[in-house]
Length: 491
Ligand code: TAP
Image (cartoon, rainbow, N blue to C red):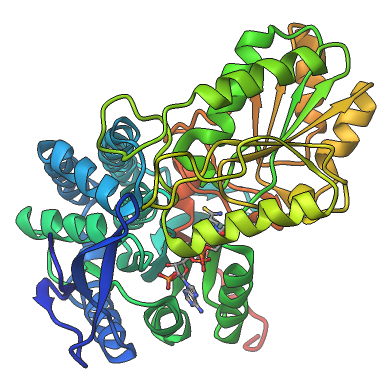
């Protein structure tokens, strides 16, 4: 396990020598300590990234040259996949097969953006048809500069990859701050970058507190772009900080995503996707389908099956074989989710299953899969992101009612619909006010497809070619082609 900051191609302790604890959420034991970056350390990291961008020539490399580094990082991740997945479980608590999937996806993300970096070399300089034929004009794309990336703890290495891979592919240099509760695998990414000879300063990793290291990144005048995934309140702070010197900004924030199940749907399939949509990663997923709307014809039967299956989910240490639900990531998160369930109960909701610690677990931040019914529409449980294994289930009568309930939220990250009637499913998919819509499934995520939200769920899109655009500027180059003088001032 690494314990130092990675700045300008070197491992270094924090400038004030301070460290923070790494806690295994399955055992509540302190398993490691990591240097906590200060504002001074962030300043060194930004200056290194600045130099790598302005003077050392990272953006001047061809896309194919940058792609070779990205592919080498992907290979480095794959070569140590099992070890990194294990670290992710120790740090985050998720079941090992999920961690294994995340790490494979992270490697895939670097390979994908290597492909897009190569394509940048052949980027057609887009000719612009001008009304005035004395001029020709074209649009070219160039990297924005130094990117400050701040990520959450739910998919530690994967969220790092979603930002670092497109940024490096575009030709930007990066200062990344992982979440304090899950910094281990971001440091492994630094180690891999170091091993494959990524030039110093191109990628800098500065674990530390959001209020210190994160704040120093967003306030730094030499950072050109901020890329953030996390909570709405911090997203707002980042937008406000970006406004001061007009930094580019992309935000991927939370959600309260609906899953609409019509009564022609297969109940077993619906239950399977609902379970996946809310209990995968302990429900700590920005796109979790946490509000399930079921048409009244199958509401009772579906709810019964959902509760039966939720009660069967095997809970335990993510490293144990067969476990499907690990602990929540931290004491703080556990307490917040328990408080949200208690508040729902006080507001009149029924806890149809779960809501408590599983029996036999005295240590670890474990919580049973929880199904809430009769949740008042104006209660926090229906309106706010809980970010835990808690789903609200509610009946509806008509398609119009379902769409209205689904869209009655300030969020708009994801939405799902299930029906055997394709025309209806497509119609509802179009009616959802959300950036990601799933038909007859929930949560599948593809590196090639755009990811991001409407409304308070964020700004901009990650992944796919949209993710690359987050790190590119567009420049207009216009040439005067006429032999005649312009003749405005000098006749
Ligand atoms: P946030 O506070 O939003 O944390 C996300 C990242 O932002 C972390 O790296 C955090 O640092 C950093 N950060 C915090 N304050 C900052 C500041 N002033 N300037 C710059 N960076 C700052 O999320 P959380 O506290 O971990 O979780 C709180 C709630 O947010 C959760 O219960 C959940 O509802 C939501 N959440 C949503 C998502 C997604 S993907 N939508 C992800 C995580 C959490 P630290 O390391 O100090 O925390």
